[in-house]
Structures are given as structure tokens and as C-alpha cells.
Image 1 (cartoon, rainbow, N blue to C red):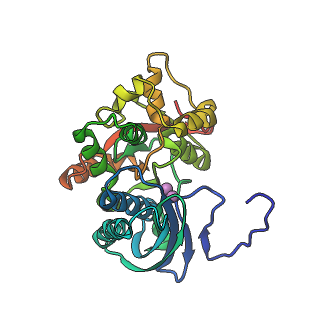
Image 2 (cartoon, protein in one colour):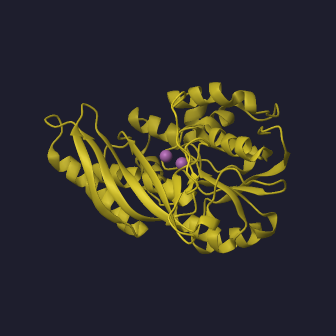
Image 3 (cartoon, rainbow, N blue to C red):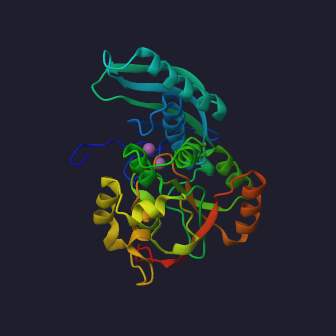
Length: 318
Ligand code: CO
Ligand code: CO
């Protein structure tokens, strides 16, 4: 987008310049639109599960802004002729189930003939303008929480390589198809959310760096506290990493300082690109206990405190 003239508008509360999860446009003092679009290629063989995962992944950006999804549209590239149309129907059915679970409605979509199958959603949500969770509000002393484990990109690589067990595939599908609605509800109820995003293609480090950069803070992570998908550490030690993890490491490693005791393969997992990852948030330390209680009450068992904001400036991750 460099070099293009971008119009400003007082009602455009969140544009694309600050790498937020969605755009936010104020309609009235009480209500703002949250808009996002995302589509991905299949990472699992089962079309129904792929539909669920892709839809959960698309809906997540609305939750990451503190919003509630209202309407969704299918975005489809389908290889007509090489895949049976029933596959597409099953994918859409999986997506539709997630749209309905979120409380949103499917209102349409668009499809093209495409050599590589792609599916996702354009989602419109709503949020109160004074309750937007941006990535620029983290404060010194905030606790950093993550609601899903990392390692999903490694597991997807193992699935594609036919190395993952049935149990591992099932677990990864369960995590990726889980909506971030309940964890966002727990965060809204607990209050004190100063910054929020979701962990997707840039990995934990990349998305956390976005918060550090735009909030102008330093974050200390506790490597041992970061939840990881069981099995992903083994694959990581074998060197089974998606290309995106290497790209993320190259791009973000200058912003990370790690102690020598943290093994390289564990760091690799923190760069691992996630599909439909968890919410990553900085919350008021006074609200942490309440939040963790709410998370466990609601069955968000992966949620963990993974670090804290240790000071202004520097914009790095320790
Ligand atoms: Co996002
Ligand atoms: Co996105």
C-alpha cells in the first residue's frame, strides 16, 4: 500500500496502518462496524473440518477487536473439474455451523474457478466505539495472556507429511475449529483489557511484537508458561517446521532477546505461524485472577498467563 493516497475520516476509528486485526468504522456514538476478510488453503483432508477451521479463523479477527460478529459472506476459490462439487458443499456446511455458533448470519458470498482451493469469510461485526480492543493500549505492569496453545503450524506440517497420529490430528482440529467467542466473553466480563490481538500467520512473537511496537512497551515472556500443542515439540526437535516459521524468525528475531537456557526448538514454536490461534491480550494485573477464574469456569482450559509488560519503550520481547 506504500505510496498510495489513503483518505482519512474521523469516523474511521481503526484503519489498516497500525496492523490491527480488523477495520473499525463508527456509525453512531454507540455502535461501530468491525470489518475483516480472511481465506486459507486446506490444511486437513476432511472438508467439513476445513470449513469449520477456516470460518473460525475468519471470525477470530472480530473477537480480537472486542467485537461481536453479525454477518458473514463466503469467499471461495474452487477447482471446478478436479474436485467434486460435494466437497465444496461440505466445506460451506462446516463454515456455516461456525457462523451460526458465533451468532452471525450468512448473507452471501462470491466464488471463482481457481486451481488451488481456498475458502474463508468476510465478516462484519459490531463493537461499542469506547470498547475497542486495539493493539496500542498495553501498559506497564499488564499481564499477558494467551488462550490457545502454539504449535498448530507445526502440526499442520506434520499432518500434510502424513506423520501425525489420528489423536494428534483430532486434537489440532479441535483447537483450530474452536471459536474465540468464549474467551473474548470472559475477557469482556473480567474487564481491564488494554490490548488484544489473535495469533495467526506471524506467530506468537510476530503478533506480540505488533502490540509492543504500537503500545511502545517491552514484554517479558516466560517460555515455560506458554501452552504448546502436545506433539509439536517433538516435530520441532526433528526440524519439521513450516516455511512461515523461518520467515517469521528472520523478520522478528532482532526484536527478541532470549536467555541461553531457552532451547532453539522451543523458540521455533514461538515463531510458528498459527491457523485460527488464540487471543493474545494485555490485561490489568488487578483483573488477572478474575479473568483466569472466568476462563476455567467457561472451559477455556488452554488459557495461560505467559508474561508481563515490563516497561515503556524499547519495543522488544524478552
Ligand atoms: Co488477527
Ligand atoms: Co486476519
